Image (tube, rainbow, N blue to C red):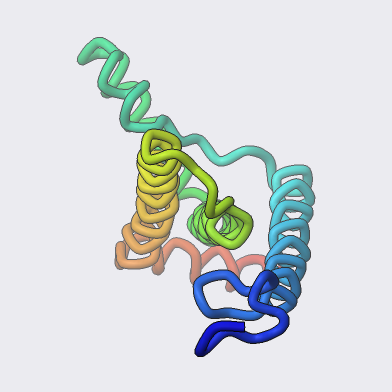
Amino acid sequence: MGKGRTACSACHWNGIHMDSRVREAVLIDEASAAVKAAMQSFDGTFGNVPFCNSTDFGMLSAEDQLDVQKTEMAHYRDRPDVSAVHFCLTSAHALLEISQTLLRQSTQLSPQEQERTWKRLAEDAKVAGRAAYRAVLILSDPSVARLAANDRARAATA
């Protein structure tokens, strides 16, 4: 064996023992499945939260864009807690999916495949960031916070 090589060098990836990568991938798989189940249960309980992604939104007419914005904002103001949870779960799931891909990606990808994979991961990260940002906007709106507090107070006295 050459200098610095160990008997199990074949089971290493970028200097990390492969069992560690597999163990972490399994944990991320479990977390992703749990978040996905939470998303499905949450949507089943509270209904879908309206959201038009930027690509689709950009293809709409000005009038349709205004309608979409009104629908989204009305929902976010009426149900800020539900909306914020939805976007937090969406972001978490997207980030876990990115992590899975990174842990499982082959070291044998061609440069073109590697570039495509990284571009797709960058797009997925944008989705995660936009969902998290949408949650921040909902949570940062003081009028939404007051509405949510009033709704909780009314529910507690009902």
